[in-house]
Length: 457
Image 1 (cartoon, one colour):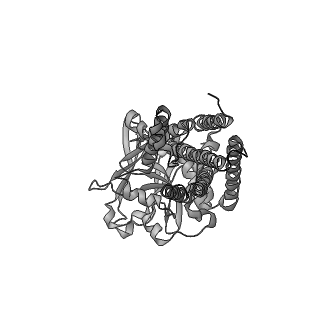
Image 2: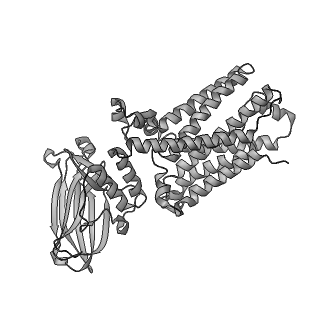
Image 3: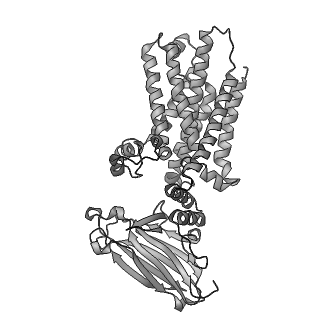
């Protein structure tokens, strides 16, 4: 069997992507992580892949409408679906144009952006999860169907699959669809099988990228075949050149769009805060705090021990996914970088306390949960362990959900002079209110720092 150049190119593109997705982190972890955030290379590539896939679907209708109108309508629906998903990827241009989200999205979308998939996901999460649906589609359509066509040699079976101009992926694309399904399900199987969180939340993104790219290849190959039939092979068009040109076009305009995005809103607060969140999610705590500080226009004292910058040195109990993270709480125009700790949780640091040191912090609940129907409050505690003895240095219960007077930053200072020069375990603890109800307990420690009154630290 002769292997065509376009088949080699597709296989190499899959292998290159697999290499980048799985090994790229070891070359430049920061570039790797940042390439996946909003308005960056991968998201723009997905957008243009889906846009071109949508356009190819509409072009194919021109070739098959006269032969089978019903099938042509399926291509139209598929093209509209790809266009919808593409626009959802970029929030229908909201971050580009900069328009405010309509009130409906502000009330129903947790990200407060103009997109429907988050809203639909909230309502349908108990019935179907979109990545799962996409994963099953990849297996059935991209793997099982081509395999059945390949092993079926009877004329009857070939007629059933081909006479209606159905889009059947070439066998070579099984690699892409299989890789897409693998990454999607792998991200969810890790916590179930190994009882731990997946290293990256990008696994689903990887899977979606492979599936979208494989659909794009399928339509491009299909359209090429239809053009060859229409011209009766009089004018041979190289499929290899066509695929390479489209691939290079997508790559170039994705890079250009990323550069434009960086120039247009690279210094905006929302963009910097999102970048900080990505840094924090993947363990770059120092960089995350710096991004938050730039976004808020503040600068921390380098002599202070910043607990958030050293979160990688802490022990979290229980080690639940997003129970501990970084956020910004804005309370009456007082915005602070906040160590988010949903109760019940305990964050413990081992450190040597400088002489004449004190612990400075603010405690609060996110203003978004200041409603009586969202449970009771949270107990904040500071514990210090010197050797075998653990002492409670601070404890305070606040309930801004039900008490108006608690709707503020509660600034506190805890003296640590008695531990000067000693190595201790210092713990930040949050527990539910007295009714043991932790619903919407979005608790946070505002800008926690260990401040030394001496020069040496």
